[in-house]
Length: 534
Image 1: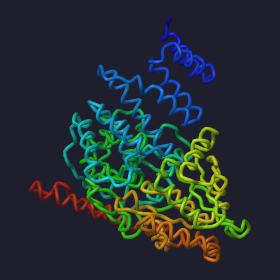
Image 2: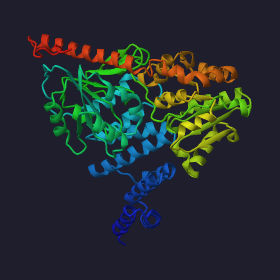
Image 3: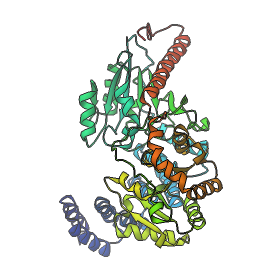
Image 4: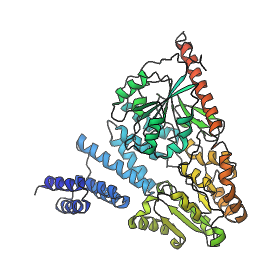
């Protein structure tokens, strides 16, 4: 009985995208030798390709009893499976299981792997009541991963224009672009030279537009961290702005070489990087929250630290659907993984308090019967009347479907960002809950900048109360439907001229601040006429 031969046969079918045949072979392997863990891992990969996270999770769950820690290789494989399990638990809103699995990964991972720590740190943001010290346990592990890196010495330049480099894997059709478009394409060319360091794996029309529009485009996808860092160093970048943080395909290890004079993170990630190579983190006066969560110094812009640019510009409906339906529809188009048990309880109380109301949830998890059944069972366990809940899959033109929503309900503590902007842009008011961490306050900042800060609250009780109050005021819902887009366009959230003035002033200030600090620290000013051309 050659199990490895069967596994190779299944792998061949998988690569040929003959998933049905591959699954049959894997089922045979699992009957013959249930402890053969590779079969479950490949099965999970197949369900991932098909787009069925429930079956992907169940495939890996079958492997858990057979994990062992006897050798370094076994521990590494176990950590890899547990990291995937933890991510899937998040996607399925099994947050306690996700937390437990990530904790095990961190304990098993010795030496730690950067990709797994990125994964863990990203998902920790979905946990409530997390202290700065809890985050630091992950940051300390991360620093061990980077111990081999020898950073470049601090160096300043005498450029006539400030060179700003942006480092990201998301120069494509991605939510980050909706917030960073003005920044990437609109810096004053008399004051700044823009460089884009792209780690995009699958380029698209947005990638191509930026490649042609921005003079200094650098593709670093196939460069090692050290070579990419040298490229940035050779470009003599004054300010390097990382837009990825601990999200997928980031190049934080490039930034760890400290190739630029000053380094910033933000916009594309909702929390501190926890890395000493970053001097600053970009936020705003409303969003910043408790700065003890940051290892970087927080830059607070006066208004919004993002500038929203919609990628698709559908016109909103003229009136809220409650007028024709004669009932209120609440909705959330956020990832279902952001929906915690506490939030499900809050939404249930809102539905109970608003007679005949409905809840519309929209996410890719609902594209399969397994996904709908999984979530339906969870809703039933919370006492929901599932006849009042509609589960819709992701669609390309999802903004149009806001015509079926009267009030959007934000998630917490992993709140909506671009999703909140999209709802408001389509004339749908959003009720948001905020806490003390930067990542929990995006909704608060967005709503305040639009002039709707009364819809952002700091407790579940107020959240429920505000949603119920709004559901009872159909006249206000009608006014908001007709005027919200105009309110947004006139607000700091979409005022690119104001945003660019504020962030350019911040760039000039921090570069001067760092120049002066390091000049004094070294007993001389090594930056020459750094701001002489500004």
